[in-house]
Image (cartoon, rainbow, N blue to C red; front, side, top):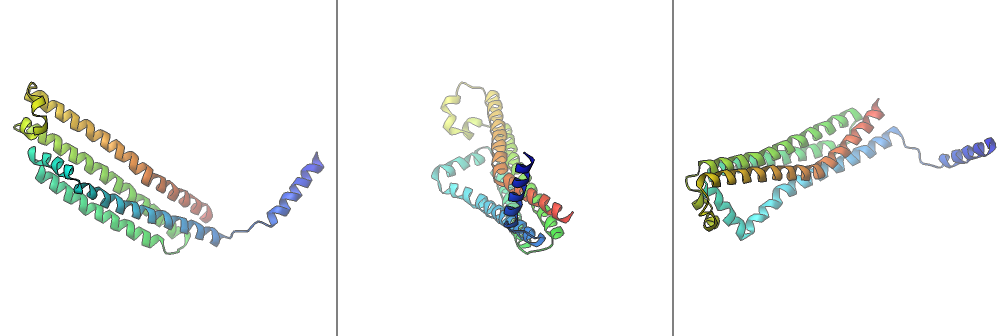
Length: 216
């Protein structure tokens, strides 16, 4: 049995001798390339996320749906919220572009580790901001419903079905519906962000750990 084990060890050592030996520099380059590719995908996804929803405005029914903001008197607040969202979205896209340019330059391990941490922090801030703006929009709509003088006029498509419902009950039902929809939308978008950005951040974290092992 011992002789067989020794023979297996010798056979493995012979095979190992033919395997390519990676130096510190080779491993560092591999991690750097993987990290650069990940950050590039974060940039691409953020640009697509910013541009694709605007295609919905080309659908005629969407224009009708946007009139609800006017009907409940919150169109100006929604406009301000949209401007803030656009400004910060462009800012974050620019930050992702900067991170991509930074991490695309081959650097020492410590510097690359700092860039990875900086990228992960930027992505987390972007996700928190995006989810927060969804909730802000929902809160504005709920307040608009609460302050609306005539909800039946604000929702003309529901006018016939709302004849036998009191104003207070309708107000409560709409606010509850808007709040529930806001929570579900936030959870859904949180799941989307986890799939899109969370998986990429996990890969970056893995690269960071590998760099720490190389450095220390």
